Length: 386
Image (cartoon, rainbow, N blue to C red; front, side, top):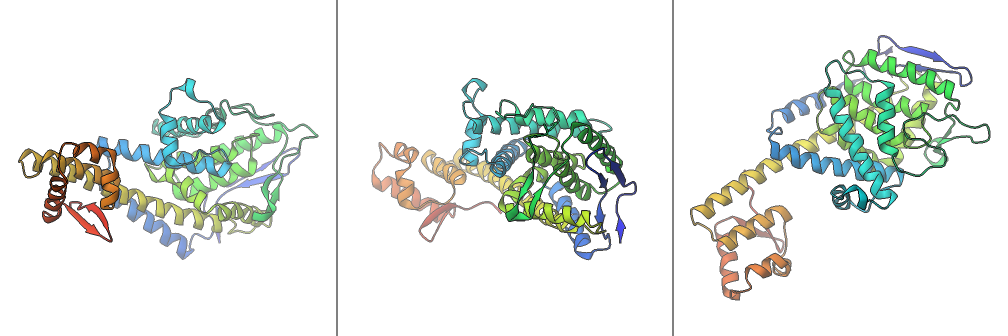
């Protein structure tokens, strides 16, 4: 059994005992090593895809950030109704943001943008200013009795704070005085920076998230800030998109996410040398799924772009007419629909306003005969280019 971090650190506080920072794991654990190998292989395959094309980058960034915002605010109970609603809100001018949910979503966009930008700085190291800035962005204009954006908490004697829930592993009382929080955060940041560039970011990032939640330095927004910090460490390790999908994974496994925090905390209290194994395994499984998801999405976007170009050439060479070209592009974006659903679309009605039903039938039949469309289980869909 071994501590993976060369310079583990034990920090003593005045009123909250001590906290030992390190990655507690048996590094010979075969499933951890297998997951790390699978992620490295999948990420190399991802990097070989044309994911740096501007159009793909823009689309992927937009989709992933909307998904991350919806997921991370859902975990905290400040979410909008859907990812589509998030995209609409992100397009609003600031003066039109009215609800807490709208403001929380825009705040998360700014925090994620910050987390993507900062690690690109030469010689990046995490600082307290980074963490406080993220917190200020996350909690801006969000009402809370005690929270001040960008400032650590200092509990009054009569205002205790508890983290967690009995249903998912129990409650935990984090350090409560400002002095103890400041001491722990300084030690925490020093430990993080000792690990950056030395240890695999896939091991450092989730444990940074775990320790940050244990310190719980702010009155509000700790979960959101912790997930941004995790993404920032991964971004510094040259993982581009998958870090920002982890909030989606956590949301879809939310009870396991919370219970594993408590399981690791209790194991650390018992000085278990493999205390971090359960959460690390959980994280690595999620990160592998996130890399595979981004890889699949890039492949899909490349195929969409190639199909668009192909349909444009067919139209230019008069192999299809303008109505057929429009149908192909619309179904390319919308996915499979039934014939009835197709006919009810406003854009489709406008296409055939001055044409007969026979023209409509003929256009569709020719697309099917040319294998540009196919029909399965009553649904029409576009044939993607291989």
